[in-house]
Image 1 (cartoon, one colour):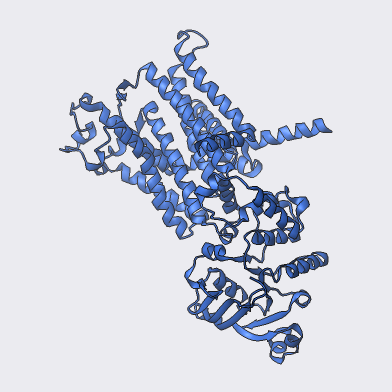
Image 2 (tube, helix red, strand yellow; image 1 turned 60 degrees about the vertical axis):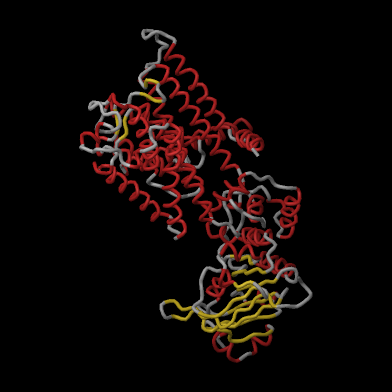
Amino acid sequence: MAESVVTDVAAALSADRGGRLLLLLLGAVAVFVPVLNVLPGDASFLHISGYTMTLTAKYMTYGMLALAVDLIWGYCGILSLGHGAFFALGGYAMGMYLMRQIGARGVYGNPLLPDFMVFLNWKELPWFWHGFQSFPYALAMVVLVPGLLALVFGFLAFRSRVSGVYLSIITQALTYALMLAFFRNDMGFGGNNGFTDFKDILGYDLQAEGTRVALFVCTALALMLSYALCRYVVASRAGRVIVAVRDAESRARFLGYRVEFYKLWVFVLSAILAGIAGALYVPQIGIINPSEFSPVNSIEIVIWVAIGGRGTLYGAVVGALLVNLAKTYLTGAFPSVWLYGLGALFIVVTLFLRHGVVGVIDQWRRFRLAGRAA
Amino acid sequence: MSGSKGTMLSLENITVSFDGFRALNALNLFIEVGELRCIIGPNGAGKTTMMDVITGKTRPDQGSAWFGQRIDLLRLSEPAIAQAGIGRKFQKPTVFGEQSVFANLELAMAGPKTVWKWLNVRITPAELDRIDEVLGQVGLQELRFAPAATLSHGQKQWLEIGMLLMQDPQFLLIDEPVAGMTPQEIERTAQLLLSLAGRHTLMVVEHDMEFVRSIARHVTVLHEGAVLAEGDMDAIQADSAVKQVYLGE
């Protein structure tokens, strides 16, 4: 089974030019960014700063998130406007582990309770914080919490055949409700401050160069593996059923497919990918707070995917990268125009570039090939 | 399956009401194995609702619906009914537009159809042969790699019938197969349906009387949710009640 999966992935990638290029690029990034961060001196023009490396890591986690949204939206036709919630939950699970790692080094020096609990005058650790001192447990939660939420939510929604814009609205409501809940101090997740001031992961200092390089490489690998996994899924016969559900749901049902299970399965897989992306984001960025649940975040992810090119997988990653590069630049240079720029970009893409940026490149390539043939 | 007569479908005393409107009113209908039955009736006669009941989309308020002797359709979900051997062809052709004709047939294949099985599966030679056979039956061999969205209206209808055939259904429900077709396409569709009868049991709902006359051996007229008349086409057209409500004479 494992062997045939490998050959299937290889076969799927051999038909996926854009994907091969992306994986190659990510492989290069995984090697060269850390090397150029560590080896050349600070003054060298080849030097990549720690800031740039962290920024690249952040983009890569966003790329993973965009991949998750493209899987569910581009291939299954389910427009989730709440995927930021799964990202944030994965992030919070990792954050809880990092908070427990601080131990007695917090401001209040309490060996068991994180600072915010001491501040709130809590005497003992809430039950759901138990276990998070263990890294494997935290990793399990990174997968299980977003996965289970997606399972329950998706089961109820898809069984009742909630679809289209109604589903989009309730996913948006889901992330909004979670944001409000996480803002409350008595939820036990640090209220509006969330978690920050992390010290170390698995005993390694989070500020140390080695740790940062290791996290960076893990992020690049996670993105590459997620890409291969998504490509494997969409190239399989199950993946074609997913597309069939998108294009003619009732036909798929009358052919004997349990459409709700297919949707549920993709939704859960997508949520888990988003959760893992969140878990990689938090230790590198160093903070997680309820604003990650903000509905605007989830809408932005959809915009990345639309701009990059929906239903291509690599387009989603490209879109996440391009939009965030623009965001980083524009929010620095012209803070007031960013949102207008994003809005304008979305309108232009929706109206004129149905297949996004990668669609344009694809068309241009075909145009050139046709020109050469003639 | 064919030859030895038996009942393929029995609908007894089926009533469906929507907000007080009786779409089906104590409907009784029996279809024999291997039959090609045409159902006609004016708009609102309950034709679509009847198909919905048979395929599990609508549950009747009362009555019983049996597939063969043993399968109680009212207890099964839509996919389970499809798996049991009832294929439904919609009025509007619904095919998977972005995928090739071949892939459409592949997805329509009979089988367990669970996510886990389909994730790691390769097409077998037997399955390839079966797809080729169906491509031949519906006359789309040359278009096997064409995206379904690029097919003409008539070709989409045939592809959809082909998708039903891939499931080896015992019983085919076909809703208005020739609506919007050219005369040549209508003729080919008639040949296709006639070639299927016997091997499969067919129920064809159609408005085009010429077409019905060209294929029908046995016609049922529905009116206000119940059977108004049944018999061969000549008998139907001679029936005074039918003339009154449907043929408008």
